[in-house]
Length: 112
Length: 115
Image (cartoon, rainbow over all chains, first blue to last red; front, side, top):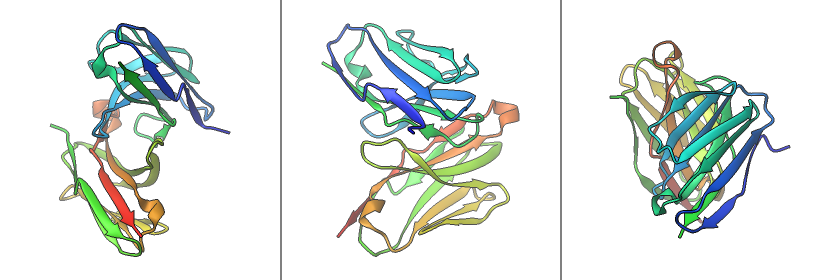
């Protein structure tokens, strides 16, 4: 039933490790996103994909690599994790770029 | 520069009281404005959308207004309930044709409703 699901919900790891977060949407939307929410609750766009093609890349370090195997999935892989990567990462989808966003429940990443 | 400013940053009210949250934006060309509610530990959920021609729209106890001339929006919550405690985020869309449909986020207003 879940419209946008992301896993894992919590992730605790050491600096320097590599980790992935997976996202799937069953809404039939064409556009998917990754957002980062910092400790002050500000949501910042990281990436946007439309029909598996990257359309927005907001000056995110190249340690972050999104991958969209099909338009229902958008995964986020992070290499060489740093302390500053600790945040809540939200996956979202929408029918069009200016449409209503449907968010997942978030993945809280803690880098020690 | 396209920006979205929300005020107040945080607000505490007693259950049953009304409150109004503000959103000012400089996004241009304007496409639409949405208010999202984010409960603690959850993803944001859309409450309402305002387009250029709309001045007021209600969704239950939530009423949003838009003044496209002054580039201001407000979200009024009537007869607040404990479940209204959340962060309210204003998101403004830039016109798709000229700026590829970008979204601009405010930093949110953290509302706490006390019994």
